[in-house]
Amino acid sequence: MNTIKVIIPAYNEGDSIAHVINKIPKIVSEIIVVNNNSSDNTQQKAETAGATVLLESKMGYGYACLKGMDYVAKQSKKPDIIVFIDGDYSDYPEELPKIIQPILDDKVDFVIGSRDKSLREDGSMTPQQIFGNWLATFLMKLFFRATYTDLGPFRAIKYDKLLALNMVDKTYGWTVEMQLKALKQKLRYTEIPVHYKKRIGVSKVSGTVKGSIFAGIKILGWIFKYSFK
Image: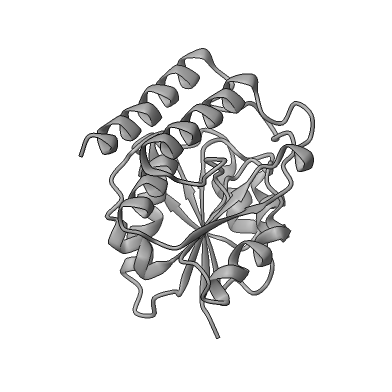
């Protein structure tokens, strides 16, 4: 029996976090919500819904994910698979089984939930998100012959492979860092099309001009850094 743990970075997701937790299938052994210094009731909502809640006071998506990983690393029994999903309820947590199935079948090490246009609710991704995803995946195809089509946050990876990636990004470059390092380390990977809907609340990244620009700079920075190594 494979042990699966889910890490959810969350900043002011009090209106959505319980929906995410409640929709995660029971095959998951532990749901870890990393409260990234929220000023609302994210922590209380997550705890009431049954999640383990950690506090990461340093602001940043990567900081929150690393906090969750550090917590798992200190446990005596390590999981076989780590799943990452956002706390805004834009993904469909009930699709987790199809995300992990290629790993369970030992066909791949790493799976990305691809927000396929045909499965996406209108308006669920901003124009800057769509363009940013296209540009990042185009550059990874150009430089590394990658087959990625998305930087989707809903993803699963074998725990030992995740550790070997030595993840370091503290903010918006987390997803692309993982994908680039997976390429460099020649991990077997695939994408699984997933449904995607409008998030609850306002995005802290794509919902602001500053967030969109900063995320774009971080993502392109990682790609060009690796393309010249």
